[in-house]
Amino acid sequence: MKGQLPAAFSDKIQFMIHAYLDPWILSGFFVAFMASLTWAMAMTKFQLSQAYPFMSLSYVVVFILSVFLFDEEVNLYKIIGCAMVLLGIIIIARNS
Picture (cartoon, rainbow, N blue to C red):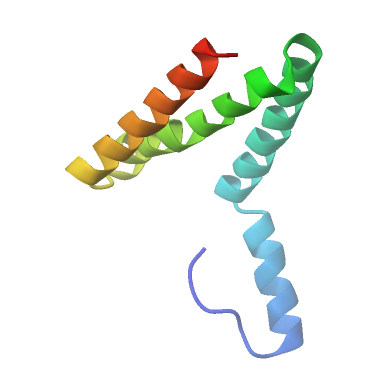
């Protein structure tokens, strides 16, 4: 769904209903719910200081998926940024 939010209140409600029923939006809600369940399970197995740095992996995963699913641009800065995130996770994980 694209476009600007309509001016009239009733049109805004209709716009929002259509937006929330969009399959991409619904799948995003589902993935967020599954992520919260996964996070809750991880908290029963790991200490927060060990598990929380791995949340940064979402930046790398989103970058990789955006390249394959949405044909987003790959450039040196994005690759260096992802490498730095991964390096940071490795450093933190080894010292936990």
